[in-house]
Image: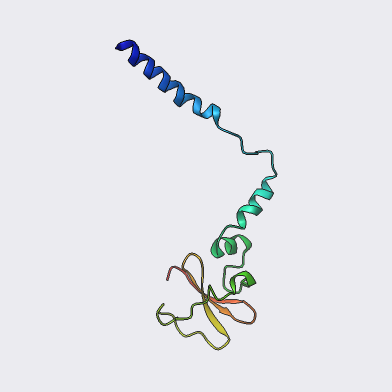
Length: 114
């Protein structure tokens, strides 16, 4: 009984300790700048804007985010003030609201964590 228990404990310890030895290397020989650029593709509006520097008053929102899927059509429901003529409210991926000029994409106001 003790011999079987000891064998079981030793096998379990070997299995746990050998797991890191079996881990695969997933190509650490690539250029890290290339990896960072690929990672940036998957960030949302807020993360990308912070990284590129346009997520601020006066910044110019890229055309990628000027589509209808970001536009806040019911600004009353969101308790936002009416957008002036030529402007519209846009919701970012993290829930912030941006008041953006329709023609230029310039951000004139940000409501963070509204």
